Length: 273
Image (cartoon, rainbow, N blue to C red; front, side, top):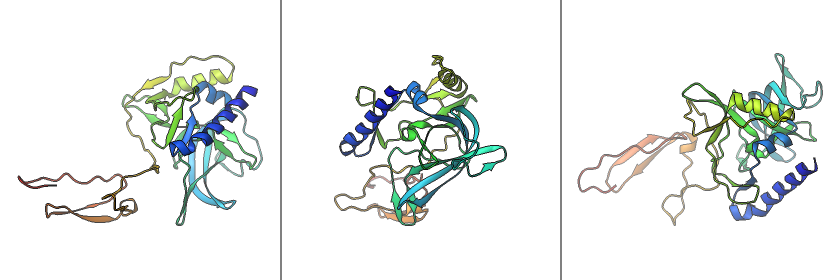
């Protein structure tokens, strides 16, 4: 237990120490063993809803998860953690700092993002407020994905780009493209919880995913247009259109979606684009 407290102190200290250097959140990435051992509650469930709220003079995002399976820890039969149930499932409330309310935004880089209908494997900490927080920001959240071969995965994308990862010796750590076979990872977690060493036979390198519904993330920096004169377009993210005029004397317009890319242009000989 003492070892767990020391690890937590180190992790928080490094986040504070390196924040001004990295320009984003810094996380000492725990191993799967450490993540399992230090998480008081591990559950599998489905996100019912997730929305920003204003509480305690700040912006938070509250996420409700219908619990399908408790892998580690216990859910209280009654209490403020569970003001309601759905069907025969208890609902867990997860509250994280950050969100958008009206024209105000609070962003914690590396914070987990949830969407309704998402099937998740969560490593949680209880709070004095009676709700829960995800352990080590996004690190404690895995989302279910499926490979082209039909294998079920628990996926966590460490290459989100808005955090700096360090190993246990505080050296920079490259993002991993390894995901976890769901059945074998669940078995490994169960073994660790029961005090057995478990077998690390669940890693899947660079899996080809059928559909990965990635949530849109706010990056710590973004491309500017025509520096040193600074412009930033908000039309795209608002689903609007813009008109661009090139020095080829041609005008093109496209509907701007969050994932929109400019159309390919055919050039005539001698034209500049």
